[in-house]
Image: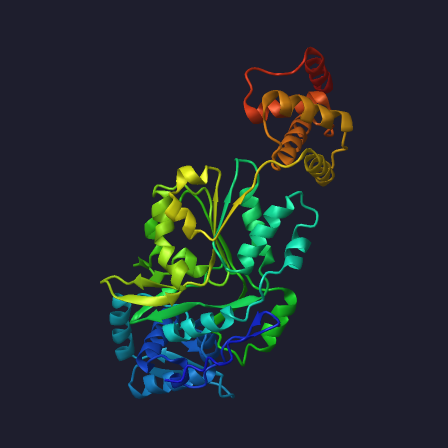
Amino acid sequence: MDLQISAGETTGGQCQLPPQPKTVRETGLELTLLAELASKQLFGSGKTHLPVLTTRLRLSINVLREVLDFMVAEQLAEVAWRGDTDIDVQYQLTSAGRQRTVAWLERSPYTGPAPVPLEAYRALVQRHSALLPAVAAHDVASEFADDCLPAAVRELAGAALHAHRSLLLHGPSGRGTTTLARRLGRLLHGTVGVPYAILMGEEIVQVFDSAIHHPPSAAAQGRAIGERRSTDSRWALCNRPVLHMGAELALDMLDLRHDPFSGSYQAPPHMKATGGLFIVDDLGRQRVPAAELLNRFAQPLDTGAEYLALQGGRKFAVPFDVTMIFVTNLEPQALLDPSSLRRLGYKVHVGPIGEGAYRTLFRQQCRALGIAPDEAALAYLINELHRDSGQPLLASVPRDILSRIADFAAFTGLPPVMSVAALDQAWSSMFATTGMQFTAAADTTFFERIA
């Protein structure tokens, strides 16, 4: 079985997909499996053009000709119409072919693209993992050039990504840890090859997910289109994925999940995130204890591989090539025992920002929302509202405050204006203060504006 995976390298961070198989042997799949998949397509569509079958099964015309010749010889299919060119031909199932296909559909209703062998998937992941560009200091500096994040936080998070180590971001709610985790995904350069489906034993596992796997830039897309005829179309060229899950994450989601309607398995989220980031947000708020959830990833993080089981218990080894980022607003020591904490590569505290950074961020958000900044009102926000209430200077507060000022202004039909009265109103709506905390003057000003 010649899998032809030697072309799965990267050039300038762009993954080069394996070459297009020209024969059934080069696909790494059995002829009978390909005949089954082609029969299911013909069963659902009736008379079908050869190019349509190539698109649906993501196989070359040469491979499909070999498959269809076999089906014609076995009296499963026949030529329904032939045009002037070699590819202008339609096929349909025979009566015997329809009977056989009904049995195949009862066993497995899967009708998607032809899968790639598990061995080919392992080989490509392992090969391009070593060749993808590493996160460097200049990448971090460029991404966070206009950010008020402390330099120590940026450096620690960047080092974790550079070393492909797991990362725990912890800090008070509203500090922006979730936003930071997502922004770290922008530091991942290059592309990865994602198979539409993988063959594990005799079962098909779907991997590609359009909600997670996004096409690369226009330039890379142009190169990919130029190479489409020479590369295996069972693979999609994608940006390095960033997958985000929160309190809804449960242990059973991390296993292969059989879907009886599609007749295939769905890959777990961390497998779909291969080559990128898997963010576990709100750690400690899942139904499973944080230590147990972390323990689920302990061996894969140590070995770079894990075993996934099909129904019936048969297990298969798959690469674990994903950077894990855990995010929590709980105290790590209260959430995890010392042993669990040691398993995490980097622990980074993201706390309140300094007053100067807070002022800069507030002005940036004013510009973003089209609200003229008022230095006296900003001083009131910091010196009165924050200090009197004990609310820390969190990075999320400026946008939250200003967006509420914009909301109230839109409600009254007037342009948003930054003032003490507007800040009082926005603050009260954010922090659920007892009663309306406006001064009499501020209260009058508000009602005068809407009169």
